[in-house]
Image 1 (tube, rainbow, N blue to C red):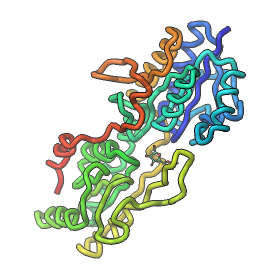
Image 2 (cartoon, rainbow, N blue to C red):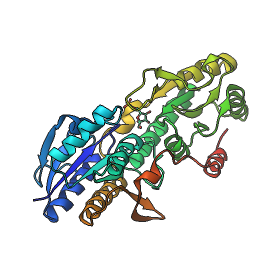
Image 3 (cartoon, rainbow, N blue to C red):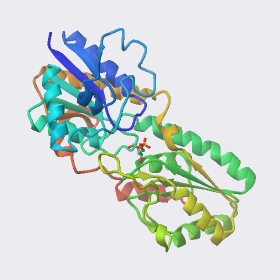
Image 4 (tube, rainbow, N blue to C red):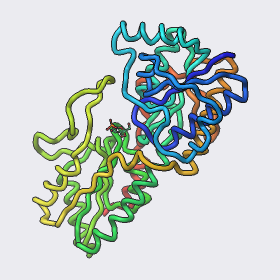
Length: 346
Ligand code: F6P
């Protein structure tokens, strides 16, 4: 029996299990043996595998997280590691591998594919910023979680006459902050794609209070570029250590913003950092359906002998795009969409 591998890499998100289930169901239907590689690319480096069958994926559709585990391991961080990954790929006798992940995981998938090891990528990230697809697994659920949080913050902000600053994930792209802020009725949304400064932010909030509103909700992306006129002007870092793909850990911009805003306006201000709550729990119906479609399509491509492709949603249709073409680019918020959200500011 020919064998297909599947792994989940990078940050987890709701819908990964739905995708794993889809891969296993379609692969078994086509007569393939399936193995899961544990903890992303680390599973390939350590040959840490688990056999997957219909029983192992039964009941996992609505479950958050990933039954395979995940990590930010980068097998291409050195030539030696890449050689181990390639040797193990051969020894595991994989016809092909389905790599479910974000830009980093997909980058490794593209390199393996270029080096002659068949891989198909499946896009996931709550950031929603992968080039070449209109949807990524996990984004819709995260938007709903964040919107619910903003709704809840409205009543407490109003009761206490407070400015509530909500920090939302999104390393490079503001999609999550923008969509949840728009849906939750935020009075101001700050995203990485639209740099701003503390003067402009305070003006918007003061103007709003002058027209009789006693509270405000400010949604800020963790990667927002805010000029505070001082050292903190650029990205606020939680942890400056780099991960294996060279990323720092973002977080804390809401706290800096709150203290500056309070110092200038004297409005009572509080911070809520949603953090990993946005990545937890059961996926929405949209994410379950999306993950199921993408997982099935990934196996269909393998069955057709394809490699180096990423399954995607484009112009409302499920399709596949060149994996290499996705790399080094990000799907960022376009100005037009931000201008719509701006109508509701202040
Ligand atoms: O890429 C998804 C994401 O949730 C980003 O929005 C965030 O910056 C990062 O992962 C957080 O990563 P970690 O789980 O390592 O804290």
